[in-house]
Image (cartoon, rainbow, N blue to C red; front, side, top):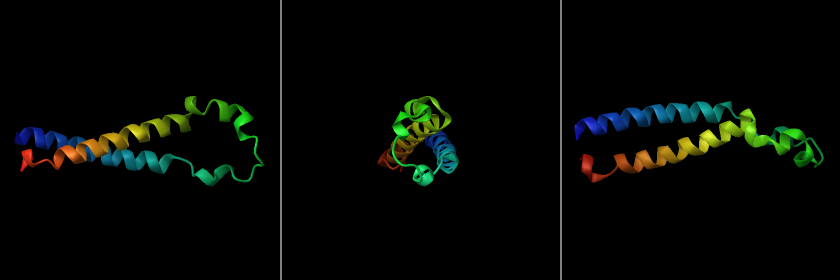
Length: 80
């Protein structure tokens, strides 16, 4: 059981580092506030899910869910 806890702790640490790096790589939400509407009509607005920014958002969501699940599992009394 101690080996499982060690493995989960290593995965948790890697997840924390990756989540921090990906959040810092993202652009701020205020980057496009200077434009007057019409952002959804542009090419980047329509294909945001396929761009690098879309990939960063998807990976942030995945890593955040993994962070919460690992934190909950590591907090169980099984490992005490």
